[in-house]
Length: 147
Image (cartoon, rainbow, N blue to C red; front, side, top):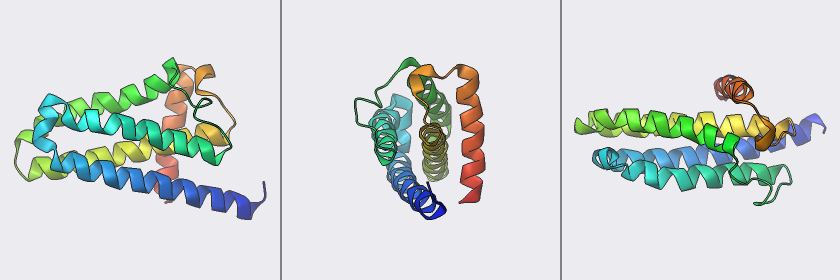
């Protein structure tokens, strides 16, 4: 792939990740008090799955190719764990809303860029080990820093 094609692909991925991050972060901020009941997580999980599916489509994968495997669920599990921990902050009006929204935004960024790196490397979630997923999450942090 030439550098223009790579740049275009990365830009399209950036737009997908940013749009889902903003949408879910906004919804989580608005639903902050509902975080104790898991309302924001219930809303966010289908969005993160759809974001990962769209990122896979950038690399020519179909929805069937990007099906939730145990490893895919591990990546989403990290998302859920942090989502549940932020629910305590949701009790504080305004501050809780902002914290909930920002946390969700950055979680979507991490998961999105990790998925992008997996797809870019031509990997399949079903073949990744926990250690490899952690390495992709670390690379995602580097990718986020670049943009």
